[in-house]
Length: 114
Length: 111
Image (cartoon, each protein chain N blue to C red):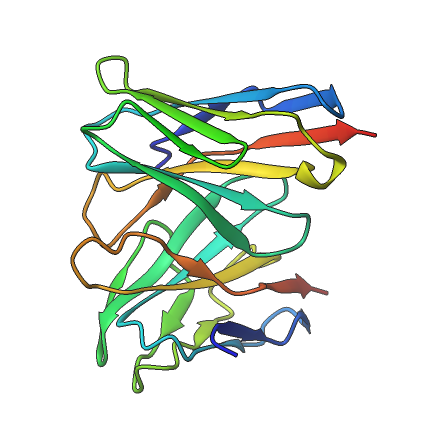
């Protein structure tokens, strides 16, 4: 099965704790993305990576960190510095070949801060 | 920053009717895409229209693009209850690597 997976599906965190969300893809895509979605809202870009060992901040990177040590994996850490982390987090990937514009999304992780 | 804004925010129609949702954006684009999201799930790509295209069809979907008005519309014909979802437009205004998503239209198709 080719695709993009996220785990866990649901995650609960106590205030002051860091948590890491997993994103894995076997589509051989170079580019990967993390988005945040709040209820009834669109997607906001947190971080993206165009290639292994390189990543860029998106529009709302404060309080988040990422790594891209492998092509297949792009984990997101929500740190205690993120003041309002309760949200739905979506990971996506995309081929960087010419003419490839579609992003493929994982099923999402719903994070709740208790 | 929000590049695309969808209109209406919510739409409720009867099964069999057509559903039209609109997207406006602010800056020049290379292409515009439409995505669908079922409740609590990831997004699924529906269709892409390039800036030099005016209309595109895919099954029951019809997308139009008016670059002079910086707007696009998505028409779903003969709607089904299974079409109930949120629909988002996305543009590549900043770069070919990034998409900027609108706030979405929530479509409810009543059986």
